[in-house]
Length: 283
Image 1 (cartoon, one colour):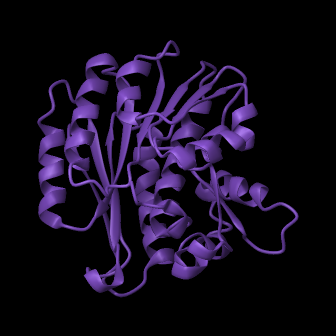
Image 2: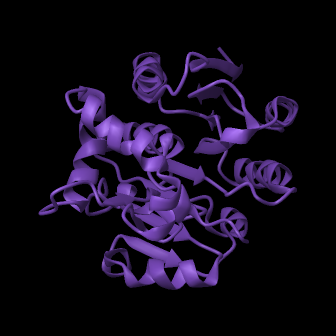
């Protein structure tokens, strides 16, 4: 596992991923019943955007820094940006960026629950040392293979909630691992909402991944949402990412029609930027 997210924290892919995650959690909050979240690849909790790794790539400048400046008045981004702002309270600029466990923890009510996994040993220790480790609604399983947690933690007692599968995709078998995890998860919790983030690097691999998801037994309504911030140029690194979302919250489906164009407008890096969404299964 040589992938280090500290080089990429707060980039356009994080903004895309965490804004949609935040909207899903807001909709879960609208009902009085408790909900459960399983985060299979939690990372270290939050990231220093002035650290050597982040400064070296400067990806946050074209991600969260730009988005926080240009989308500050966007109502659908209010709670997401408020969590980022709170993490930087008392700072003169945007220094720290929250990972998905910190964002999710910001939405938890008294009876809601978050289980976070992280396999990388050093990252696991860092994650445990954050305030999340003292959060009574949060359980940190680290070091722990998040794919194994899909088998072990589902179905949750709460009966409603979300599984976020957000691997680094550095392993050549990662797409296959995701498909296996989805299949196991749906066997255990067919009504659960499963959000799978993926990078867009190879169109053939992405198409094969979509095909394999659609062929899973018991698959429910599944939405594909994608953001490309520029035309594909391997010399410039990652140009796009997406969500395959099984059983997406209705509100997220509605919001995506407005949010995806906003993300594209604010985060576009050249004229090749585009977004699209479609139903992979259902509708």
